[in-house]
Length: 100
Figure 1 (cartoon, one colour):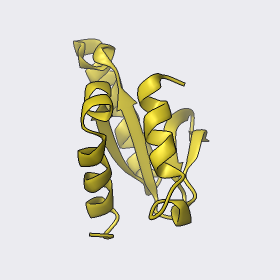
Figure 2 (spheres, rainbow, N blue to C red):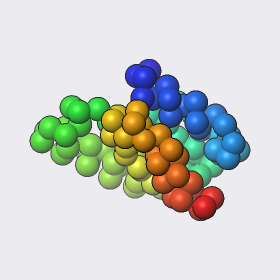
Figure 3 (cartoon, helix red, strand yellow):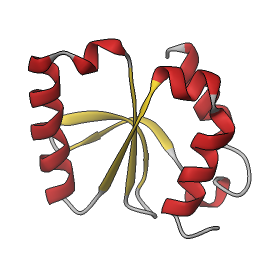
Figure 4 (cartoon, rainbow, N blue to C red):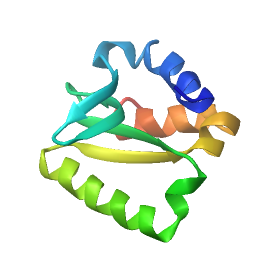
Protein backbone atom coordinates (compact mmCIF):
# COMPACT_ATOMS: atom_id res chain seq x y z
CA UNK A 1 0.00 0.00 0.00
CA UNK A 2 1.36 3.40 -0.94
CA UNK A 3 1.64 6.17 1.68
CA UNK A 4 -1.28 7.99 0.04
CA UNK A 5 -3.43 4.87 0.13
CA UNK A 6 -2.50 4.33 3.78
CA UNK A 7 -3.59 7.88 4.66
CA UNK A 8 -6.90 7.47 2.85
CA UNK A 9 -7.46 4.02 4.40
CA UNK A 10 -7.11 5.56 7.87
CA UNK A 11 -9.92 8.00 7.06
CA UNK A 12 -12.17 5.36 5.50
CA UNK A 13 -12.03 3.26 8.69
CA UNK A 14 -13.33 6.14 10.83
CA UNK A 15 -16.72 7.80 11.21
CA UNK A 16 -18.65 8.77 9.19
CA UNK A 17 -17.18 6.38 6.57
CA UNK A 18 -16.94 3.39 8.92
CA UNK A 19 -20.60 2.44 8.48
CA UNK A 20 -20.04 2.00 4.72
CA UNK A 21 -17.54 -0.84 5.26
CA UNK A 22 -14.87 0.14 2.77
CA UNK A 23 -12.54 -2.65 1.69
CA UNK A 24 -9.07 -2.50 0.16
CA UNK A 25 -7.83 -4.23 -2.96
CA UNK A 26 -11.11 -5.97 -3.70
CA UNK A 27 -11.81 -7.58 -7.08
CA UNK A 28 -14.65 -6.15 -9.13
CA UNK A 29 -15.04 -8.01 -12.37
CA UNK A 30 -11.54 -8.63 -13.74
CA UNK A 31 -10.07 -5.64 -11.88
CA UNK A 32 -8.75 -5.01 -8.38
CA UNK A 33 -9.79 -1.61 -7.04
CA UNK A 34 -7.97 0.42 -4.40
CA UNK A 35 -11.02 0.90 -2.17
CA UNK A 36 -14.67 -0.03 -2.47
CA UNK A 37 -17.85 0.25 -0.46
CA UNK A 38 -20.24 -2.36 -1.82
CA UNK A 39 -22.96 -0.85 0.34
CA UNK A 40 -22.49 2.62 -1.22
CA UNK A 41 -21.55 1.18 -4.66
CA UNK A 42 -18.51 3.49 -4.65
CA UNK A 43 -15.00 2.72 -5.88
CA UNK A 44 -12.12 5.01 -4.92
CA UNK A 45 -8.89 4.95 -6.90
CA UNK A 46 -5.68 6.72 -5.87
CA UNK A 47 -3.71 7.58 -8.99
CA UNK A 48 0.01 8.21 -9.12
CA UNK A 49 1.74 10.17 -11.86
CA UNK A 50 1.84 7.18 -14.24
CA UNK A 51 -1.94 7.46 -14.57
CA UNK A 52 -1.52 10.66 -16.58
CA UNK A 53 0.37 9.04 -19.45
CA UNK A 54 -1.69 8.66 -22.64
CA UNK A 55 -1.78 4.86 -22.74
CA UNK A 56 -2.68 4.60 -19.06
CA UNK A 57 -5.39 7.27 -19.37
CA UNK A 58 -7.02 5.19 -22.11
CA UNK A 59 -6.73 1.98 -20.05
CA UNK A 60 -8.18 3.71 -16.96
CA UNK A 61 -11.12 5.00 -19.02
CA UNK A 62 -11.93 1.47 -20.23
CA UNK A 63 -11.49 0.10 -16.71
CA UNK A 64 -13.73 2.79 -15.21
CA UNK A 65 -16.43 2.13 -17.84
CA UNK A 66 -16.35 -1.62 -17.08
CA UNK A 67 -16.66 -1.04 -13.33
CA UNK A 68 -19.44 1.50 -13.80
CA UNK A 69 -21.27 -1.00 -16.02
CA UNK A 70 -21.39 -3.24 -12.93
CA UNK A 71 -23.29 -0.51 -11.03
CA UNK A 72 -20.47 1.30 -9.20
CA UNK A 73 -19.50 4.95 -9.21
CA UNK A 74 -15.77 5.45 -9.64
CA UNK A 75 -13.94 8.44 -8.19
CA UNK A 76 -10.24 9.06 -8.74
CA UNK A 77 -7.90 11.15 -6.62
CA UNK A 78 -4.33 12.06 -7.45
CA UNK A 79 -1.75 10.84 -4.96
CA UNK A 80 -0.66 14.43 -4.41
CA UNK A 81 -4.22 15.47 -3.48
CA UNK A 82 -4.49 12.68 -0.92
CA UNK A 83 -1.10 13.56 0.55
CA UNK A 84 -1.52 17.34 0.56
CA UNK A 85 -5.29 17.88 0.79
CA UNK A 86 -6.72 14.93 2.68
CA UNK A 87 -9.39 17.13 4.28
CA UNK A 88 -10.62 18.20 0.85
CA UNK A 89 -10.63 14.60 -0.38
CA UNK A 90 -12.63 13.58 2.68
CA UNK A 91 -15.11 16.42 2.14
CA UNK A 92 -15.55 15.49 -1.53
CA UNK A 93 -16.26 11.89 -0.55
CA UNK A 94 -18.83 13.02 2.02
CA UNK A 95 -20.56 15.10 -0.66
CA UNK A 96 -20.54 12.19 -3.13
CA UNK A 97 -22.01 9.93 -0.47
CA UNK A 98 -24.75 12.43 0.44
CA UNK A 99 -23.39 12.91 3.95
CA UNK A 100 -22.93 16.68 3.59
